[in-house]
Amino acid sequence: MAVAGRPHINMRQLAKGRKRAFEASACAKAILAGEHAAVYGMPAVCIPVRSLRARAGVDSAKSGVTIEAPDLGLAGEPGAPGFPGGLEHLAAILRETSGALGIGFDRLKLRVESSIPPARGLGSGAAVSVACARALAGFAGLDLPPETASAIAFEIEKIHHGNPSGVDNATVAFEKAVHFRKGSPPRFVDPGRLTFVLADSGPAPPTASMVSLARGKLGAPGEWILSSFEEIAELAVKALVSGDARALGRLMDRNQMLLSAVGVSTPALDSLCAVAREAGALGAKLTGAGGGGYMIACVMDEDAQAVARALTASGAQGVLATGLGGESVQ
Ligand code: PMV
Image (cartoon, rainbow, N blue to C red):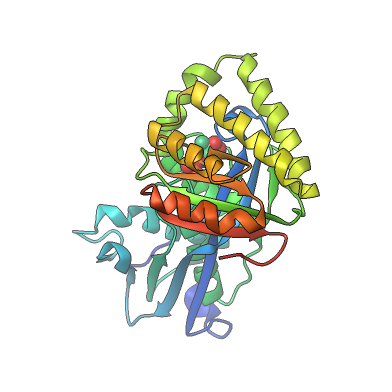
Protein backbone atom coordinates (compact mmCIF):
# COMPACT_ATOMS: atom_id res chain seq x y z
CA MET A 1 0.00 0.00 0.00
CA ALA A 2 1.36 3.42 -0.91
CA VAL A 3 1.14 6.32 1.55
CA ALA A 4 0.39 9.71 0.07
CA GLY A 5 -0.37 13.10 1.58
CA ARG A 6 -0.70 15.73 -1.14
CA PRO A 7 1.84 14.23 -3.53
CA HIS A 8 3.18 16.29 -6.37
CA ILE A 9 6.30 14.18 -6.81
CA ASN A 10 6.34 10.43 -7.14
CA MET A 11 9.14 8.45 -5.54
CA ARG A 12 10.05 7.04 -8.97
CA GLN A 13 10.70 10.56 -10.23
CA LEU A 14 13.16 10.93 -7.39
CA ALA A 15 14.92 7.65 -8.14
CA LYS A 16 18.10 9.33 -9.30
CA GLY A 17 18.53 11.49 -6.26
CA ARG A 18 17.38 8.99 -3.71
CA LYS A 19 19.63 6.76 -1.66
CA ARG A 20 19.09 3.01 -1.25
CA ALA A 21 18.83 3.29 2.51
CA PHE A 22 18.89 6.19 4.91
CA GLU A 23 19.20 6.50 8.68
CA ALA A 24 18.59 9.49 10.91
CA SER A 25 18.19 10.25 14.58
CA ALA A 26 16.80 12.91 16.93
CA CYS A 27 17.55 13.72 20.56
CA ALA A 28 15.47 13.84 23.73
CA LYS A 29 14.67 17.09 25.57
CA ALA A 30 14.23 18.31 29.13
CA ILE A 31 12.35 21.42 30.27
CA LEU A 32 14.20 23.60 32.80
CA ALA A 33 11.33 26.02 33.38
CA GLY A 34 7.84 26.83 32.21
CA GLU A 35 6.10 23.57 31.30
CA HIS A 36 2.31 23.76 31.46
CA ALA A 37 2.45 27.57 31.61
CA ALA A 38 3.87 27.31 28.05
CA VAL A 39 0.47 26.06 26.87
CA TYR A 40 -0.96 29.49 27.91
CA GLY A 41 1.67 31.53 26.09
CA MET A 42 4.18 31.85 28.94
CA PRO A 43 7.89 31.32 28.19
CA ALA A 44 9.56 27.94 28.62
CA VAL A 45 13.24 27.02 28.71
CA CYS A 46 14.15 23.68 27.22
CA ILE A 47 17.43 21.87 26.51
CA PRO A 48 18.37 18.98 24.23
CA VAL A 49 19.44 15.71 25.90
CA ARG A 50 21.74 14.35 23.24
CA SER A 51 22.70 11.05 24.85
CA LEU A 52 19.14 9.71 24.46
CA ARG A 53 17.99 9.37 20.85
CA ALA A 54 15.25 8.03 18.59
CA ARG A 55 16.60 6.40 15.42
CA ALA A 56 14.77 5.76 12.16
CA GLY A 57 15.94 3.84 9.11
CA VAL A 58 14.29 3.72 5.69
CA ASP A 59 15.12 0.99 3.20
CA SER A 60 13.68 0.19 -0.20
CA ALA A 61 11.18 -2.64 -0.50
CA LYS A 62 9.84 -4.63 -3.46
CA SER A 63 6.31 -3.40 -2.86
CA GLY A 64 4.16 -1.48 -0.39
CA VAL A 65 5.06 0.38 2.77
CA THR A 66 5.96 -1.48 5.96
CA ILE A 67 6.55 0.02 9.40
CA GLU A 68 8.56 -1.84 12.02
CA ALA A 69 9.13 -0.96 15.68
CA PRO A 70 11.29 -3.79 17.05
CA ASP A 71 11.33 -2.17 20.54
CA LEU A 72 7.56 -2.69 20.66
CA GLY A 73 7.66 -6.03 18.80
CA LEU A 74 5.30 -4.53 16.18
CA ALA A 75 5.27 -4.46 12.37
CA GLY A 76 2.61 -3.85 9.75
CA GLU A 77 1.44 -2.20 6.56
CA PRO A 78 -0.48 1.09 7.15
CA GLY A 79 -4.09 0.78 6.02
CA ALA A 80 -3.92 -3.01 5.71
CA PRO A 81 -6.16 -5.21 7.90
CA GLY A 82 -4.51 -6.00 11.24
CA PHE A 83 -2.25 -2.95 11.22
CA PRO A 84 -1.28 -2.61 14.92
CA GLY A 85 -2.82 0.34 16.77
CA GLY A 86 0.56 0.87 18.45
CA LEU A 87 1.99 1.89 15.07
CA GLU A 88 -0.69 4.48 14.20
CA HIS A 89 1.63 7.22 15.51
CA LEU A 90 4.27 6.17 12.97
CA ALA A 91 1.73 5.88 10.15
CA ALA A 92 0.62 9.45 10.93
CA ILE A 93 4.24 10.66 10.72
CA LEU A 94 4.57 8.99 7.33
CA ARG A 95 1.41 10.72 6.08
CA GLU A 96 2.42 14.09 7.51
CA THR A 97 5.93 13.87 6.01
CA SER A 98 4.47 12.80 2.68
CA GLY A 99 2.18 15.85 2.73
CA ALA A 100 4.90 18.28 3.86
CA LEU A 101 7.37 17.12 1.21
CA GLY A 102 4.77 16.56 -1.51
CA ILE A 103 5.96 12.99 -2.06
CA GLY A 104 3.91 9.82 -2.40
CA PHE A 105 5.84 7.16 -0.52
CA ASP A 106 5.74 3.61 -1.81
CA ARG A 107 8.01 0.57 -1.76
CA LEU A 108 9.80 1.25 1.47
CA LYS A 109 10.34 -0.13 4.93
CA LEU A 110 10.48 2.30 7.87
CA ARG A 111 12.13 0.99 11.06
CA VAL A 112 12.13 2.95 14.32
CA GLU A 113 14.06 2.36 17.54
CA SER A 114 14.51 4.63 20.51
CA SER A 115 16.56 4.84 23.69
CA ILE A 116 14.24 7.62 24.96
CA PRO A 117 11.81 6.16 27.49
CA PRO A 118 8.28 6.94 26.23
CA ALA A 119 5.73 8.80 28.39
CA ARG A 120 8.38 10.19 30.74
CA GLY A 121 8.48 13.89 29.78
CA LEU A 122 11.61 13.55 27.65
CA GLY A 123 10.04 14.35 24.29
CA SER A 124 10.08 10.78 22.99
CA GLY A 125 7.13 11.42 20.64
CA ALA A 126 8.69 14.50 19.07
CA ALA A 127 12.04 12.72 18.70
CA VAL A 128 10.44 9.76 16.91
CA SER A 129 8.59 12.17 14.59
CA VAL A 130 11.73 14.14 13.74
CA ALA A 131 13.90 11.03 13.27
CA CYS A 132 11.31 9.46 10.91
CA ALA A 133 10.76 12.66 8.92
CA ARG A 134 14.54 13.06 8.51
CA ALA A 135 15.01 9.45 7.43
CA LEU A 136 12.11 9.59 4.95
CA ALA A 137 13.33 12.86 3.43
CA GLY A 138 16.90 11.56 3.27
CA PHE A 139 15.72 8.36 1.59
CA ALA A 140 14.02 10.53 -1.03
CA GLY A 141 17.27 12.44 -1.53
CA LEU A 142 15.80 15.62 -0.07
CA ASP A 143 17.14 17.96 2.59
CA LEU A 144 14.83 18.46 5.53
CA PRO A 145 15.38 21.85 7.16
CA PRO A 146 14.85 21.77 10.95
CA GLU A 147 11.91 24.20 10.55
CA THR A 148 10.11 21.60 8.40
CA ALA A 149 11.02 18.72 10.73
CA SER A 150 9.69 20.79 13.63
CA ALA A 151 6.47 21.62 11.76
CA ILE A 152 5.87 17.95 10.91
CA ALA A 153 6.45 16.92 14.54
CA PHE A 154 4.13 19.73 15.73
CA GLU A 155 1.28 18.38 13.59
CA ILE A 156 1.78 14.95 15.16
CA GLU A 157 1.90 16.47 18.68
CA LYS A 158 -1.46 18.10 17.94
CA ILE A 159 -3.01 14.70 17.23
CA HIS A 160 -1.84 13.36 20.58
CA HIS A 161 -1.85 16.40 22.85
CA GLY A 162 -4.65 18.53 21.45
CA ASN A 163 -3.12 21.88 22.31
CA PRO A 164 0.69 21.55 22.42
CA SER A 165 2.85 24.61 22.93
CA GLY A 166 5.41 23.41 20.37
CA VAL A 167 8.35 23.50 22.77
CA ASP A 168 9.18 19.79 22.37
CA ASN A 169 9.32 19.74 18.57
CA ALA A 170 11.34 22.98 18.39
CA THR A 171 14.01 21.78 20.85
CA VAL A 172 14.26 18.32 19.30
CA ALA A 173 14.28 19.40 15.64
CA PHE A 174 16.93 22.11 16.13
CA GLU A 175 18.78 20.20 18.90
CA LYS A 176 19.43 23.51 20.64
CA ALA A 177 18.57 25.11 23.95
CA VAL A 178 15.49 27.23 23.40
CA HIS A 179 13.75 30.17 25.02
CA PHE A 180 10.30 29.35 23.77
CA ARG A 181 7.01 31.21 23.59
CA LYS A 182 4.01 29.64 21.87
CA GLY A 183 3.11 31.41 18.66
CA SER A 184 6.52 33.11 18.25
CA PRO A 185 9.51 31.71 16.39
CA PRO A 186 11.73 29.82 18.86
CA ARG A 187 14.69 31.80 20.20
CA PHE A 188 17.77 29.62 20.46
CA VAL A 189 20.33 30.37 23.13
CA ASP A 190 23.94 29.38 23.76
CA PRO A 191 23.98 27.82 27.21
CA GLY A 192 26.83 28.28 29.63
CA ARG A 193 28.69 25.26 30.92
CA LEU A 194 26.22 23.42 33.14
CA THR A 195 25.63 19.89 34.36
CA PHE A 196 22.34 18.15 35.04
CA VAL A 197 21.32 14.80 36.50
CA LEU A 198 18.06 13.21 35.39
CA ALA A 199 16.14 10.34 36.97
CA ASP A 200 12.92 8.48 36.22
CA SER A 201 10.08 8.25 38.76
CA GLY A 202 8.11 5.80 36.58
CA PRO A 203 5.40 5.91 33.90
CA ALA A 204 3.41 9.13 33.48
CA PRO A 205 -0.16 9.59 32.21
CA PRO A 206 -0.59 10.98 28.68
CA THR A 207 0.45 14.64 28.34
CA ALA A 208 -3.10 15.55 27.26
CA SER A 209 -4.57 14.39 30.58
CA MET A 210 -1.92 16.26 32.62
CA VAL A 211 -2.52 19.42 30.55
CA SER A 212 -6.23 19.08 31.17
CA LEU A 213 -5.62 18.57 34.92
CA ALA A 214 -3.47 21.73 35.01
CA ARG A 215 -6.11 23.72 33.10
CA GLY A 216 -8.16 24.14 36.26
CA LYS A 217 -5.33 26.11 37.85
CA LEU A 218 -3.83 27.79 34.77
CA GLY A 219 -6.64 28.19 32.26
CA ALA A 220 -8.39 31.25 33.76
CA PRO A 221 -7.42 34.54 32.12
CA GLY A 222 -5.17 36.69 34.32
CA GLU A 223 -4.34 33.73 36.56
CA TRP A 224 -1.67 35.02 39.00
CA ILE A 225 0.36 31.82 38.97
CA LEU A 226 1.13 32.26 35.26
CA SER A 227 3.08 35.46 35.94
CA SER A 228 5.16 33.59 38.53
CA PHE A 229 5.95 30.89 35.96
CA GLU A 230 6.83 33.66 33.49
CA GLU A 231 9.17 35.44 35.89
CA ILE A 232 10.98 32.20 36.74
CA ALA A 233 11.44 31.21 33.08
CA GLU A 234 12.77 34.66 32.13
CA LEU A 235 15.31 34.50 34.97
CA ALA A 236 16.13 30.85 34.20
CA VAL A 237 17.09 31.63 30.62
CA LYS A 238 19.53 34.30 31.87
CA ALA A 239 21.05 31.81 34.34
CA LEU A 240 21.28 29.20 31.59
CA VAL A 241 23.12 31.55 29.24
CA SER A 242 25.52 32.81 31.90
CA GLY A 243 26.12 29.27 33.24
CA ASP A 244 25.04 30.37 36.73
CA ALA A 245 24.26 26.94 38.19
CA ARG A 246 23.34 28.27 41.65
CA ALA A 247 20.80 30.75 40.30
CA LEU A 248 19.38 28.17 37.90
CA GLY A 249 19.07 25.60 40.70
CA ARG A 250 17.14 28.04 42.90
CA LEU A 251 14.82 28.87 40.01
CA MET A 252 14.22 25.19 39.30
CA ASP A 253 13.23 24.70 42.96
CA ARG A 254 10.79 27.63 42.70
CA ASN A 255 9.40 26.22 39.46
CA GLN A 256 8.89 22.84 41.16
CA MET A 257 6.91 24.52 43.96
CA LEU A 258 4.59 26.06 41.38
CA LEU A 259 4.19 22.75 39.54
CA SER A 260 3.29 21.10 42.86
CA ALA A 261 0.73 23.84 43.49
CA VAL A 262 -0.76 23.15 40.06
CA GLY A 263 -1.07 19.48 41.05
CA VAL A 264 1.18 17.88 38.42
CA SER A 265 3.94 16.65 40.72
CA THR A 266 3.71 13.35 42.59
CA PRO A 267 5.13 12.05 45.89
CA ALA A 268 7.67 9.99 43.88
CA LEU A 269 8.84 13.07 41.93
CA ASP A 270 8.96 15.19 45.12
CA SER A 271 11.00 12.48 46.83
CA LEU A 272 13.53 12.21 43.94
CA CYS A 273 13.92 16.02 43.97
CA ALA A 274 14.57 15.89 47.74
CA VAL A 275 17.11 13.05 47.35
CA ALA A 276 18.97 15.05 44.67
CA ARG A 277 19.05 18.21 46.83
CA GLU A 278 20.26 16.29 49.90
CA ALA A 279 23.05 14.77 47.77
CA GLY A 280 24.24 18.23 46.77
CA ALA A 281 22.06 19.28 43.81
CA LEU A 282 21.51 23.05 43.55
CA GLY A 283 17.87 22.60 42.61
CA ALA A 284 15.52 20.02 41.11
CA LYS A 285 12.13 19.78 39.45
CA LEU A 286 9.97 17.48 37.39
CA THR A 287 10.39 17.87 33.66
CA GLY A 288 7.58 17.65 31.11
CA ALA A 289 3.93 17.14 31.86
CA GLY A 290 4.46 15.40 35.24
CA GLY A 291 2.22 12.91 37.00
CA GLY A 292 5.31 10.67 36.83
CA GLY A 293 8.24 10.54 34.46
CA TYR A 294 11.59 12.26 34.82
CA MET A 295 12.95 14.86 37.20
CA ILE A 296 15.98 17.01 36.42
CA ALA A 297 18.50 18.41 38.90
CA CYS A 298 21.07 21.15 38.31
CA VAL A 299 24.42 20.20 39.89
CA MET A 300 27.99 21.37 40.13
CA ASP A 301 29.99 19.19 37.76
CA GLU A 302 31.97 17.65 40.63
CA ASP A 303 28.75 16.61 42.45
CA ALA A 304 27.14 14.89 39.46
CA GLN A 305 28.28 11.38 40.31
CA ALA A 306 27.27 11.67 44.01
CA VAL A 307 23.81 12.94 43.04
CA ALA A 308 23.43 10.19 40.44
CA ARG A 309 24.49 7.54 42.97
CA ALA A 310 22.03 8.85 45.60
CA LEU A 311 19.17 8.80 43.09
CA THR A 312 20.01 5.25 42.01
CA ALA A 313 20.29 4.14 45.66
CA SER A 314 16.82 5.61 46.33
CA GLY A 315 15.37 3.32 43.66
CA ALA A 316 15.22 5.73 40.71
CA GLN A 317 15.49 4.18 37.25
CA GLY A 318 17.26 5.54 34.18
CA VAL A 319 19.60 7.91 36.04
CA LEU A 320 21.84 9.88 33.71
CA ALA A 321 24.10 12.90 33.86
CA THR A 322 24.31 15.29 30.95
CA GLY A 323 26.40 18.37 30.21
CA LEU A 324 25.57 21.51 28.28
CA GLY A 325 27.94 23.99 26.74
CA GLY A 326 30.60 21.27 26.79
CA GLU A 327 30.94 17.51 26.63
CA SER A 328 28.52 15.09 28.26
CA VAL A 329 29.73 14.06 31.69
CA GLN A 330 28.13 10.61 31.38
O1 PMV B 1 4.78 15.93 26.64
P1 PMV B 1 5.79 16.36 27.64
O2 PMV B 1 5.74 15.54 28.89
O3 PMV B 1 7.14 16.43 27.03
O4 PMV B 1 5.40 17.83 28.16
C1 PMV B 1 5.34 18.93 27.32
C2 PMV B 1 5.24 20.19 28.12
C3 PMV B 1 3.85 20.74 28.41
O5 PMV B 1 4.06 22.12 28.75
C4 PMV B 1 3.22 20.04 29.60
C5 PMV B 1 2.91 20.64 27.23
C6 PMV B 1 3.26 21.59 26.09
O6 PMV B 1 2.72 21.37 25.01
O7 PMV B 1 4.03 22.55 26.28
